[in-house]
Length: 398
Image 1 (cartoon, one colour):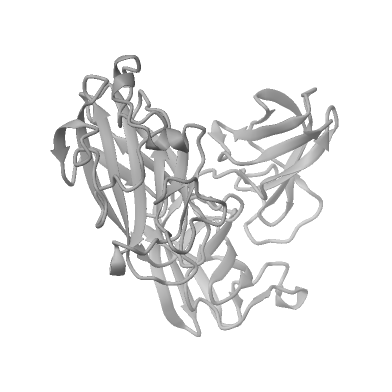
Image 2: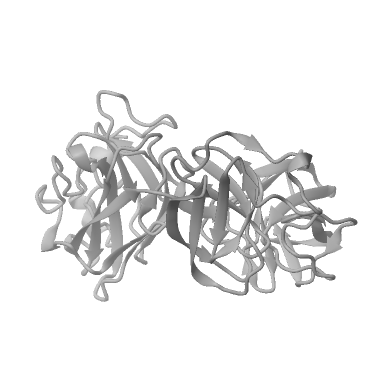
């Protein structure tokens, strides 16, 4: 990590895109958060300081809400400064109650040219930073020609109140030390959220599985049983908990105090809809969520296969079948997918041998694995132009 500490003023002439004057990215604590410096303070940049900059945006996928103990959020941080030629970033997340000393959740780097470091410049381990220096900093390792970074944030396991994301975004005007340094702080509040049950990303569709995270959602923890099924339909209430999406009853497969799994009802509405959770006929929470026409996603993170073999994939949100079936209705046999589906593995087309609904909201997709070399290959499916989120992989055995 010595590269993170070296000031590369002499290297700036030979590396015109160098932003922070550090060959491995900025040192820790350059966010402008309480207790931190900025790159302007440390004299590694000369330029304009822009506080609360409207050019900086943070997309959390949940509208600025986190659920204690909930799933990771995929964040996208952008800078729209029209004068910039290159960009660098450092970001930290703190508990608002003690923003100088208390880390909020965990940061995860998901791109090759980014890293999460601790206050002593060492790389954070999968468990985070040591207890005596808990603050984490997401940073670039090489500057970019575009002002967009993606990362993941794991919310705290318990309700710590409001958390603050401090962003310092360098927008290099000349490609060297002369920068417009943008600062902005984003507030993220505890609350409930509804996400795609397969990918844990925003966006679900009619007839697709939804996971709802929150607090005091149910009085028990259990899945539906055959005795809960009435007239061939999944239950709309379990142990006193029920869910409405855009005013229509959803079908429940699992309830607990912190998590519900529900099948979205049939409804042509798309965009922002209201999700309501009731417990014992009293409203527990109501919040906005995103509903799409299609929201395809695979369950799990991946599986192992043989080269030239078959991969059996399971997902939700792939759309209507032919013939159609109402959401929540049990049926037999499997129903073929109506939309046009393509699948790629490692960037190569995989022949789809079957794609259809095998149970309420659950699709089975059987593909022939291309003749790929051993290793890990990312898988994408696309139905009628809508693609599955990243993060699903096939490991091809040697």
